Length: 96
Ligand SMILES: [Zn+2]
Image (tube, helix red, strand yellow):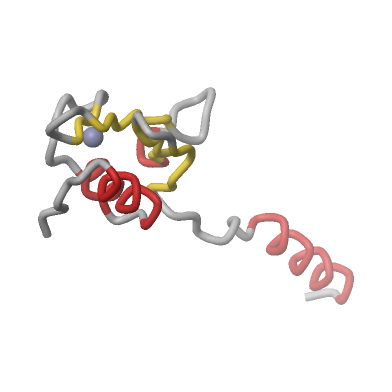
């Protein structure tokens, strides 16, 4: 390879190197009423992920996207220390 081409190749590979891997699920927002989670597996053309609302109901934690109390969003939410603190304040016992 010509030295100029080597330089070009190294520049190109730098441009093409993907961003450091980001977590699939990310805690986005937290309140007394629920938590918002960014799910990057649900990305589409217009956004890099979808915001999922997980609600703290009086007797359960409910994911509005899956309409489930046991999906990965709920499990993820229950692992967030801030969520555990809120649920403890509500007097809940978090099941493992
Ligand atoms: Zn879910």
